[in-house]
Structure formats: structure tokens, C-alpha cells
Amino acid sequence: MKIKKIETITSNEFTEVCWVRIHTDDGRVGLGETWYLPQSVSSVIHELFAPQMIGLNPIEKDEIWNRLFRLMSVFTYSGAELRALSAIDIALWDLVGQALEQPIYNLLGGKVRDKVKIYNTIGSYGDYQDNEFEQKDPVGLAQSLLDEGIDVMKCYYLAPFSENSGGNYISSKDLKNALKPLSIQRKMLGDQIEIAHDGAGAWQLTPAVKIVKAMEEYDILWQEEMIQPVNVSTHKKLAEETKTPICAAERLMTRWGFREYIEQGVAEIVMPDLVWTGGISETKKIADFAEVYQTPIAPHDWTGPVNVFACAHISLSSQNFMIQETNRAYYKGWYHKFVEPNILIEDGYILPTEEPGLGTRLRSDVLERSDIQVRVTDEAANWNVVGFIDPGQKVPNYFSRNTS
Image 1 (cartoon, rainbow, N blue to C red):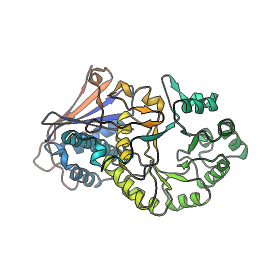
Image 2 (tube, one colour):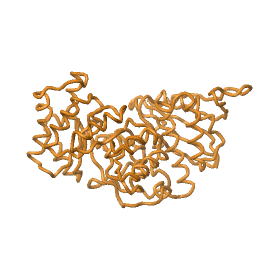
Image 3 (cartoon, helix red, strand yellow):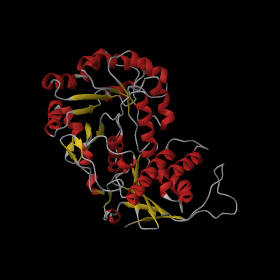
Image 4 (cartoon, helix red, strand yellow):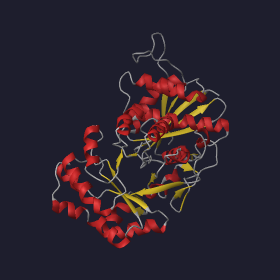
């Protein structure tokens, strides 16, 4: 089994998603995905990664990951480069699972649970305008989740107020107003539903401390990214100021980015984003490292359908799994337009796929959409250690097409 062709697929309707398909000479197709600046990701794949991969065996995915990581780290290892590597890694795992006729969770050591508990993050698409629903009827929103068997939710109560001050200040009056929906939810529903809070990395330390202390009376499940994860000492101060667990952080990249936060106990709940931090391979390493420090993981998601499938394989096979993020406005609203089968969620749990590999694929009619762009690399080239194509080699051929 050798890699024959690599495609990137983007959509004008969902402008943040980049899908990657890796084709092999025996007819298999592996699917990967990442989110944010998809054209930048596509350029990285076709200009840098894909030419290196033509002719390689997907079974050697660890060596491929390391080779590509070393190549990109000549310049930097994060940003579009790491998102591109994440999508490629997912697709390679999908291929290996197909070749061995096993779902990915079996290749990660096997299931340690039969289903994956989820929580719902507020989002909007189509019939599910949950952001507006929360503003108009916070209790109704929470109750609608409970009616579906989902008893954990995550909200962004302070978001409008951080925008007003640049995250540097919040008055006691504004804080009280911001927490009114939370207060009503707790008064009407009590402990029927767990509530996590996401600060979106928007605050400086002093107002963040004021906020987390004010929210303690509402028994918050965790405080997520109240401040940017750029200073472990500052995060430690925040953790010491509150009895609420600190969740960190989708913005930390690779095992090296998470290391100090886990070692110092600052990330009391570890939240890697699989499609940003290095794919299935790296997320499993982060999960295993967190387990050494008796720290649970809660995989991040607010993106596309492939991420949910990939995260579920990690969640099914990791002993220290806590809960997985989902967005019902997305999995009920648009995932089915692009993948089949869609993720299966019942009574607040993801049910595992029994299919080999990832367990889903792009729908056959996706490439017929008029808003789809496809870029392809099918010729090999090698880059030397300083990041330039070796002298004497022709530039690899990659081409673009719009399916319309």
C-alpha cells in the first residue's frame, strides 16, 4: 500500500473547513480534517507536505508524522503547518484502520468504555439557533438539552463584556448582569444540568479572578481559558484563586505545549483540540501524559464532522477520558451534508462505530457541489533540511479545480 495522491477539499459554504483525502495505489481513501484558514492549510499541504508523502506507506504513519514535523519546525511548528499535519495524521489512521479492517480505537489499545459521554456547546446553524435561544430563554435552552438526554452544557456568559473592555476590566454591575442567565438556570433547574464556562481566552488575570470567584456559588463544572495559555505561572495563580477546576487548553499545541501545564497541575482538566494539535497520534500522547498525572481529558470540538469521529476514538480508548465536546447545531444541522454516516448520538452519548478506520467518509455527491474547490498533488519531491527543494529536482505538480 503506497500513497498515490493527496487532495484538499474546501467549501464556500463552510469557509473554515479543510478536508484532506489520501489515496493509495490499492484504491483506499483516508479522510482527514482541520478547521480555520483552510486555504493556508491547503497551501502548506501541497507546497510542503504532499510531495514528501507520494510513494510512502501509510502504515509508517509515525515516521511520516515525525518527518513532516521536523520539516516544518525548521521555520515554526504551529499555525497552518500543524493544522495541516493534524488533518494528514487523521487520514493516515483512517487508511491503516481500513487496511487492518479495524476501527481506530482498536488500534489505540481497544475500547475501555462502550459509549462516550458528551456535553453541548452553544452554537447556531439552521433550525438550531442556540445562541439566540440562550439569550431569550436560558432555562428553555438547558431544558431542551435535558430533553435529549444531554445533562452537561457549556456557555459563554461573559463574552459581550470582554469585548467592551478588551478583557481588562469588568464592573460588579456588569458581572451581575452577565451572570443573570446562569442564576436563572440554577434557580429553576438546580443540579439537573452541569454547566461549564468558557472565557475564550479573553481576560487578563485580575478580572478573570473576579469572575471565577463570583461564579463559584453556581457550582461550575470548570472554568476554561479565562486567560490565554501563554504563561503557566499566571495560570497557576488563577487556579489557586478558585475552587473551580481550570480547563486548559485548545490553544496549547502538541505534547510539548501541554507538558508544563500538566506537570504543574495548572491544567486540572486537559482539553486538546485534535485537528489543531497534531491529529490522533499527538492527542493520544497528550492523553497518556495527562494520565501519568491523574488528570482527565475532555477533547475539544466546535468544528467539523471528522473531528468528532476522530475524538471519539481517543475517548473510547483513553482511561482518563472525562467528557467530549459536541455542538448539536452542527451535528444536527450540517454534518450530514458532507459525511456518511453521520455521528450517532443517543441520550447524551456518542455510540462507537464498528466500521474499519475512522468510520465515516465524504459523501459521494460532495465533489458535485458548485461551491467545492479541490487541489491535488500526485508527484513526489524531496525537501532538504533548510526547506528548499533539492537542486536538480523539478517543482512538484499540483493543480486546482472547481468541480463546477
